[in-house]
Length: 331
Ligand code: AMP
Ligand code: TRP
Image (tube, rainbow, N blue to C red; front, side, top):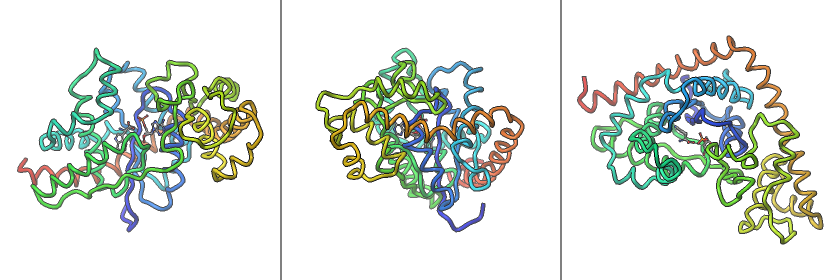
C-alpha cells in the first residue's frame, strides 16, 4: 500500500440493517472516490458491543455487512476491507488514547448523550469511551481523510484534538485527520419522522428506514407512508423536513441540481413525488441487492477478501501502535 495518494479511513457498525442513510451519507461516497485515495474500510464490530448485542446475531451481521459493502461497490483491488476485531491494535491504541483524553471532552459527545438516553439501562463505560476507540481506528492508519455522515463530525474533532495532544506531549506521531462530509445526503432523515435522522437503532419502527435489502414492494410501501405536510409545494425548503428529505434522496440518486428537480416537479402533487422517489430508490438499489444475494452465497470468497484485508491493515497497525506505545514509555 505504498502510494502517494492521501489515505482515507472509515468505519461502519454491523448492527441493525444497513440503510439508505448509511449508503447515501457514507458508503456511496467511499465507493465513488476509491480511485482518488488509498482506502481503508473497517466493519467496526468492537464498537457494536458498546451496546448489548446477541453474540450469534452480531457475528452473522458482521459478515453480512462485509458482503453488503462489496455489493455496494467496495472493490478489494482498490480498497482494504477488514473486520475491526481481527486487528487487536485498535483496542490497544484506544487504551493509550483513553489515558490522555479528558473526561470532560467525552462528556460533551452528543452521540453518547443520545445513546445513553435511549438505553438508560445499559450505560456502560465502553459507550462513554467509544470515541477513543474511533480515534484509535483513524489514527492507527495515519489517515488523512475520514468520509462520514454529519453525525460523526464531533467524534472526528475529538480524534483531531487527541492526535494534536499526543504529538505535542510525546513527539510527532499521528497525522491529524480531516472529516470529509458530503453536502447532499450527509443527513438522511427518518421517513416516519423527518425531524430525526434515519438510524439503525430505530429500525424496529416499520416505516422509519429503507434497508438496502428491502424489496421493491417494501420500498414503495414505505415511501408512500412517508410523512410530508399539507403545503403541497415540491421545493427544497429545509423547514419542511419531510418533502426536503424525499427530494434529497431523489437528488442523491438522480444527481440533478435542486433547480432541475424543482422544475421537474412544478405543478405536481406529493403522490407523483413519492412515486418517482420510489422508482429512483428501487433502480438505484437494484444492482446492490442482486450483487449481495450472490455474494452471501460465496462465503469462501468473502472470507478470503477479509483475510487479505486484515493482513494489510495489520502491518500498518503494528507499526503505528509500536511507535505510539514506545513514545509513551511502554515496553
Ligand atoms: P453507523 O450506522 O452509525 O455505523 O454509521 C455508518 C456511517 O453512516 C457513518 O458515516 C454515519 O455518519 C453514516 N450515517 C448514519 N446514519 C446516517 C443518516 N441518517 N444520514 C446520513 N449518514 C448517516
Ligand atoms: N462511529 C461511527 C458511526 O457510528 C463508526 C466508526 C467507528 C467510524 N470508527 C470509525 C467512522 C472510524 C469513521 C472512522 O457511524
